[in-house]
Length: 270
Image (cartoon, rainbow, N blue to C red; front, side, top):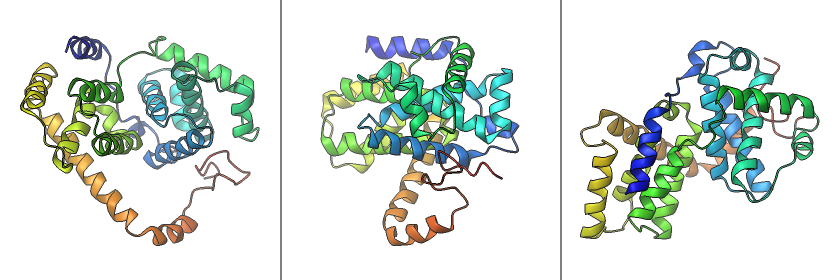
C-alpha cells in the first residue's frame, strides 16, 4: 500500500492535463485517435509493448496542455501534431522498452516525412515542457499496482482491465482526470464484468485502496466508469460488425498508413 500512497502523493503534485483541443481549430480528437491507432500498429510490427503507447500519450497530453510556444504550434499544424505524437512515442520507448528505437529507424517508419533533426528538436521541446519529469505515475501504473496488490492475475481479468485501459488511452477525455481515478476505474469495471469472485481479503484491500486514493463518493470515479462502460459497449458493437468496418474504413477521410502523403493516418492536406 505504501507504493500506492507514494504514487498518489506524486500525482497530486503534478498539474492536470486539459482538453487542449478547445484551443485548436485545426487538430481535433480524431487526429489523436488516429495517432494512437498508428502507434499501436507500430508497436505490434516492432514487437514492442502496446502499453508504451499509453505512456507516450501521457507525455503528449502533458506537452500539449502546457503553455509553451511549441505546443501551441503543434495544435495549429497537423504536421507538427503528428511529429509531437511520434516523438512522444520515441521518448517512451527509449525510457521504458528493453530495446532502443533509433531515430534513424523512426525516420524510416515515417518514410522520410520528418528528418532526424526535426525529431530530435521536438524531443528537446517536449522534455523541456515536461520539465524532464518523465516518471510521473500514469493511469497504467496505478492499474498495474492495484492488480498486483489485489493479486489479481486471472488472465481474463487482466486482459479486460487492459482493454479498458486501451480505450482510455484512445480518448483524450480521460487525460483530464487523475491517473489514479482512471487506473482504478479500469479495475472496478473489470470486477463487474468478469466471473472472478474476489476473496474477503481482496475486497478488504480494495476498500483500503479506494480510501487511500479518495475514491469513495468521488464523482470523477463514477464519471470515468460510466464513460469507459459506454466505450466498451460501443467497441463490442463494432466487433460484431467487422465486415462493415472495412466498408467504413474505405470511406474514411483519413489517409491510409500506406499513403505516401503522410506517415500516419491524419489528413494533413485539409
